[in-house]
Image 1 (cartoon, one colour):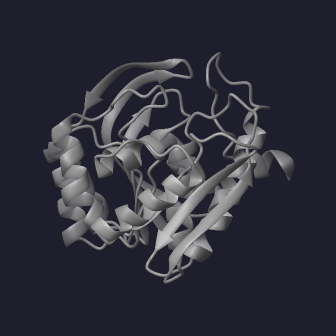
Image 2 (cartoon, rainbow, N blue to C red; image 1 turned 90 degrees about the vertical axis):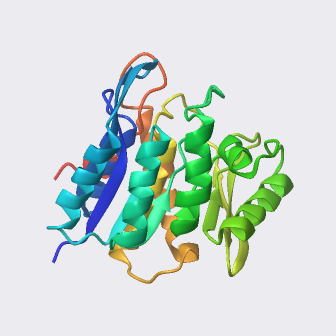
Length: 271
C-alpha cells in the first residue's frame, strides 16, 4: 500500500513554495501527496501580489473529503491565513487521524513582514502548536511564538528552541538560516535533549520555498518511517533540502528569488 502524506497550506502560483513545493517534495520521496488549500496567492519569484483566503468551512470540507476516504500517514501544515482557518485545522488535528503532524508556522516573510494578524498568531500558538508533533519555525517566527526578541546567535537559538518545547510540549526544529556564518545550523529540541544539525551554507538566490520544502520532506519521511524519532528523520530531510538548494541555481526560473529544484534526482538520472 502506498504511503500517503497530506499538505494543508496555501497555493503558490509561481510553483516554488506552498502546496506546489510540498507535492513536489512528497513525489521526490515516493510518497503519494494529498492536499487541502487554505489560501490562493498571486505570486512569482519577485513577490506576492495578492492573497485570497479560503473560507474556514471549505477548508473543513476539504479535510473531511480527504480523510473520509484516504488513510493519511503524516501531515504537513503551512500557511493558514487567518484565525478561522487555524481553528478549523486545529480541530482536525485533534479529532482526526493525520499521522505525525509537522507544523511550519508561516508567520513572518523573509523581508520581516508579518503574514498573520495577532488573532491568528495567538490561535497558532495556543490551539495548533500544542497539538502538533514537530514545529519548524525560523528565527523570527520562534520569536513571535515566544513573544521575545529574535535570537542573534546559536546559543540564543538553542535557548528559544528549548523554551518553545517547554511551553508547548511539541518538538522544535528551529531553523538557523537567518544567522550568519559559513554553516547553516538548525537546533532540534525534543524530550531527548537538544542537538545541532549543521550543513554548509549555500550561496544562491534560489531560496524560494526552503521552509515549505524542509517541513514537507520531514512529513514525507515520517510517513515512510512510522514511529521513527525526529533525531533520525531530520538529518536526511535536511540533506534533501541541501541538494535541492544546490541544484536550484541551475533551474534559472524567474527573475527574483528562484525556486529550489525538487526533482534534482530525476535530472541527475533521467533514465
